[in-house]
Image (cartoon, rainbow, N blue to C red; front, side, top):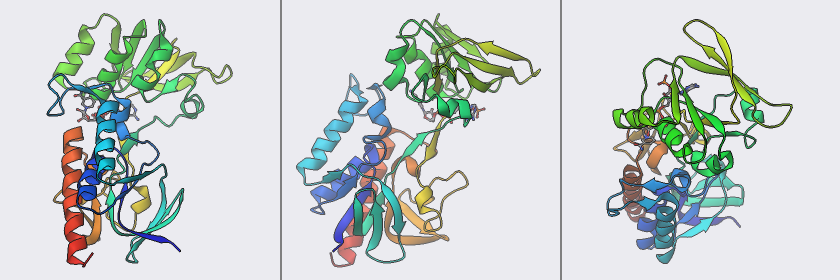
Length: 315
Ligand code: NDP
């Protein structure tokens, strides 16, 4: 028989783990489905300097591990599984996961956002062979080599600066003239002797498919169409993230970019009407702030609404 839980939390990043701490402490024995990227984006960052309470900063993976321990102490359960499909029309809601079927009286969606790719076939073919979306995971492999980072936002600047620890030269390629990155991050990148910023430039092709390793990039200057080749052995993507909410399309409202539309940060809606018992928190519903602390805050809010919902329905 399919098990019925009080609450299931999708995602084990900052939002999901905060929701797990609160719902576990309220005695709801939450089940956390850890998802495709356990620990979420913090688990692949280095030093987090702006999470209140850590005056010297804390490593992202350590912060996540601490939150997980805290949730476990109060009775949260974790499963290394992801959601395949969901039926929100029946109550309890029916979930099909990579580990089987579960019914749940309430659902907290904290599935976050994943790195965006350019979408070039050559890029996709060379992921893990010189193409990466995670500087902190893969930078180590490029010691003494020349590499490129695509993007013009804070992520691209942060990746480029981080990669200077390993690479001898980092070229940042941005498709426009002006940058989206904050002034401080841009200035740091511009001031670094091993970072070169190249604007109005797009990547047409990643070279090296036959060798199964990145050999260079075929570039184009968008102002005059001029093509060139940049010989690099690594390509890092720093072009933002996509919300992980596709499986909810048609059952809860998503905005034009696929983020879950929420009211008061956590209430999900369908055709504009609040869906009782389904809450969303963290980056899957936040295109504006996207911070660890705001994700944690909305995770707490989702947990408190879940408690209230279950109590009102006699559980
Ligand atoms: P952003 O959306 O801010 O920037 C994405 C960048 O990638 C833009 O410059 C965009 O170009 C470019 N881009 C997007 N798609 C493509 C494409 N297909 N081809 C080429 N270029 C593309 O995302 P970030 O991840 O940089 O930042 C997200 C949020 O997180 C921001 O609020 C940021 O401030 C914050 N952040 C803060 C950090 C810090 O303070 N330490 C570190 C990292 C992130 P265009 O400008 O033309 O749209």
